[in-house]
Length: 433
Image (cartoon, rainbow, N blue to C red; front, side, top):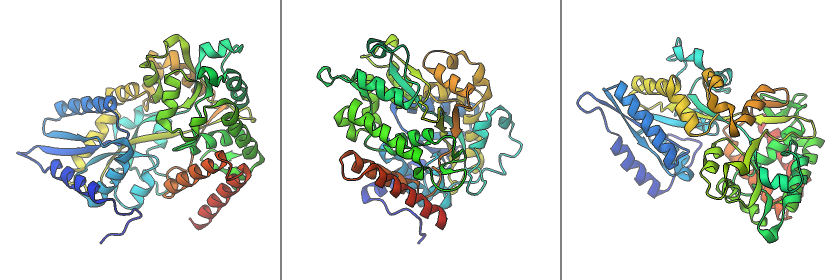
């Protein structure tokens, strides 16, 4: 029996996978049937992908693609089990937090040799090309479909009512403006604080921005002179400001907020500021509580350094190593990564696109996208950095960090103890790597 780094999932999930595997099927009357599994599922996104697959099938009459769309909170576990079983999956969504464990277990197909001479390389941005190579072994397990990047969503009307001329540009500005806007009696709060699932992402964002002059841009958790960013005086100052924002300018219930609650808090008009990825643009545009004139986006907040560390985060399309149809799977990956398909996917899902041609697209030059263009044009201030999200222990780290942030929020751990714990964790991991 093959041993992996993952445990065995529950009986119900195994049964579901067995049904899914049966649904995949083998070639029928000469037609190859591929099974593709997405991870960050939502109905609108699934419709976009299905439309692209329909276009692919029209261009490739000998290939059909069945799309599997598990609920988001179970998707990576389901993909893991399908890869582990070696059946029912050909093409899959590979996230920057799953490429490490999936490739370490030998579940992903290495496309390096197959993509030699691919014409699509010339159309990709430098950032997209860099993300095709997995740093741990130099192989290509996926082609990115787009990028996430943080910006500040803010209420233009509430900022003006509070007497400010413009949106915050720094974390200190945010604390000041959010505190001024906070009025619980009117059910009005300053900041959509993230205290629940993945709370570590925003804490790390402020820490790396405060210490932007000291960090290794290829590993934002590491200092250029050695050691972890969590050991610095800048980290201590950053978390002090961040937890002050919770105490003075956030809803008390946000101690448990994750992604959906944060977005809902801004979309329903109860909070004035939200730090999130561009995918939220589409969600807020559909809000019935906010008009287009009531909100906008501003660049990522700078720290005491006067700079911001913009984490490069992405997902992409990859191939299961156990697929019986690598040639057809590769053809699908190329289709989704060149021509109109990646631009359509990026626009419909509010992602920073992977193609150079998007820079000339008016879509990305107006409205909420302006802040992203501004950050792209000022990389000396908004520094693109890579967090070590591909390491095999990333999930363990995220769970540990979230738990300890909760401990600080409820007064069971000090900020200094949390940073010391994080510093020790990464120091020991790197020493035993």
